[in-house]
Length: 224
Image 1: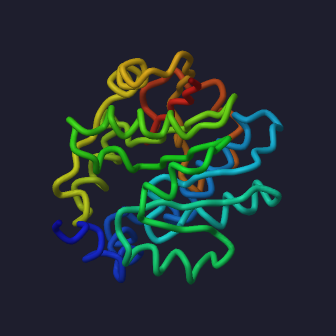
Image 2 (image 1 turned 45 degrees about the horizontal axis):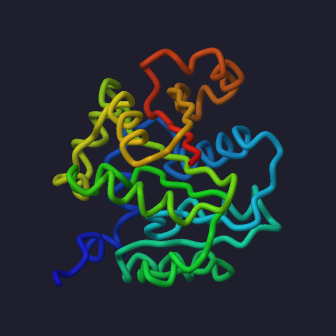
């Protein structure tokens, strides 16, 4: 088995991501928190018992998941053991692993997958969604966040990231189709991340813009 791709980027991931982002858009952590806050809003006050950050990498989203869901067990899965070492230092409380056989023994109320699936080979994406669906608890939901390939700033950042060289973005319509093919019975969706940090005061307008295909990213909320 070859060495996981992201092992080579683990030590410098934060720096490379920062270097890829145009000045003025805000820190990368701002966007991580942004997505977790949206996740919490979409849950409409429901408190999950167990949350999985699927493809957690070095753990950028984990502190915000713990902050938003302080009573939940927070788990992280990633194929890169080197990235998980950094995640463990960042969030010692989280339960982390790269062995799917251990993860699939659990059931999760929420699975959070932020900018992960464009790194999965297109032929393997539906299978990955199916594996996630099988470990959802009754009433559980998967939240998929991905880059919007029609947003020019998103494309610019994507093309500048060394770890995205072999990745392939896909559209919201394709993500919705994948959801159906993976066996999810219900989904809701929308575009998000319209406002960088300097314009954060406009975020209250986002619920009115979810159908406008100009957001930097989109989400699909899936239920089995």
